[in-house]
Length: 111
Length: 113
Image (cartoon, rainbow over all chains, first blue to last red; front, side):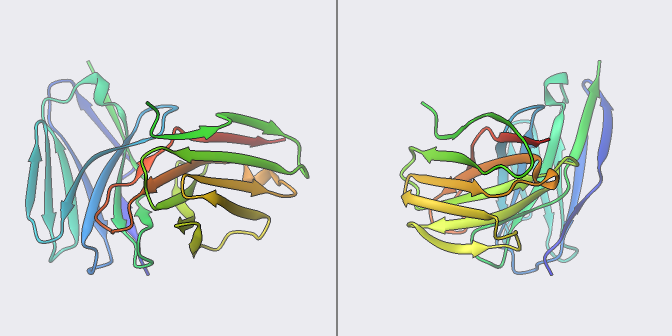
């Protein structure tokens, strides 16, 4: 079945780079997403990548996709305390339009 | 300009009660969703509606009934609330194509006592 796995916690110092990793099982997924959830808030789409791409860069964010290994990563350059949040990896489920989420990675940034 | 709004933001109620959560989107999207986030922050799809028609109904108890009076609204009615229903419920909307971004509402935190 469809499954998305992420490590649960990541702790970095301000100014360092953060790398959040994700693996997924559905090789037919055409789009893969990263969402951010700040404490007590809803989900905010950070970025997404189409499955025929290897990399996508958007300001401080870099998404790398290894389709062979079904591995997706999100790199945040120059991590700030405001980046502290839960980051969810998601793939489009086979049902059509529903997102299948990973369990979320809690990023903690210390100054 | 709120894109996807939900009411109420917080809902505290007793076991056995019936309650509804409302969702509205002003983005002109065709598809709306309900997701449940449990106490461990795990997010899972519950329902999906496209043009007022149910297209996804994951394994949720039939105490949960979504209702879509029009394309812009998808309400969630829950009968006979149980302790395990305590969670944050997120509404989302998108256009119909898989590549279309889903926009999420702020969530409704339901606490069943």
